[in-house]
Length: 135
Image (cartoon, rainbow, N blue to C red; front, side, top):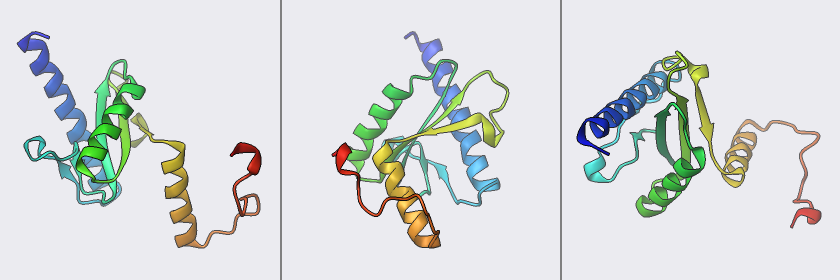
């Protein structure tokens, strides 16, 4: 990639990170900031237990982004890998609905289980143990 394209790509990534940071701060109240890459931090810091990989692309490859997040989260030991994706060009960058989240089913179920336990939410359809047919 030539230097002009590389710089434009970094700028687009920075804009996406800043947009997500402001949404997480202003809409959800989390004290997040952009990570310091030279200190080997994730794209955004301030969601304890979550390694944030932020992608702002016209054709996001969530599988590649997720693999990157897994690799970095393992290296940094900073939480479960979660990819926040914004499809560039849809006009919703500063809109909560323009962002999507991608994570593994296992990590989602761990988060859901923690939320469910914390809220003591009764679930009439939740299994009490894993279905042996799927093991």
